[in-house]
Image (cartoon, rainbow, N blue to C red; front, side, top):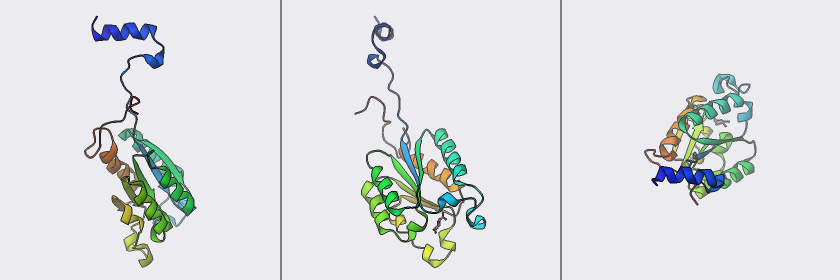
Amino acid sequence: METSGIRKALASILPPQDRMSEPAVIPPLIAVLYGPNINMLGMREPEKYGSATLDDLEALCAETAEELGLAIDFRQTNGEGELITWVQDCRGRAAGIIINPAGYSHTSVALMDALLAVDLPVIEVHITNIHRREEFRHLSYVSKAATGVIAGLGVGGYALALRAMAERVAPGAAFGGAPRTDKDE
Ligand code: DHK
């Protein structure tokens, strides 16, 4: 009996979990993390941050991730400790991190250390061009742990960040490894 015949015969007698099926490719998980005051997008200084809300941003990221074959875990917090814990939780769980650390970009050595510790591709995104703004915004500690930085392109910067991330982690991508499947581990 040829292979397809064996498969059909087995499929009819074995319980579903034992059948010889094609392995399903698991989409790489990207953590999309936001720091303080990003929950106020849309009402916060719209002349700088634009009119899109956090919900709009989530919809944009979800749509772009689906198109690229990525899974995303989208979260926002105002707390530095919580943001650091979320970064730590990415180790062994996520394939990459896209982060807008907001005000913590300019103050948090601890957040930089957490991003270095997890050893994942990191893309830092700022809605505004921090280099055209006050001098205290020009330094980002997080940039020292980032693979790349996008600043000043509005919320569209997150779609660009997801595309850049897909080039690194998606199955068969330019910088990616072999696809993970449900038969791994
Ligand atoms: C957002 C913030 O909340 C500021 O603290 C940063 C960043 C800039 C942004 O442009 O997305 O300085």
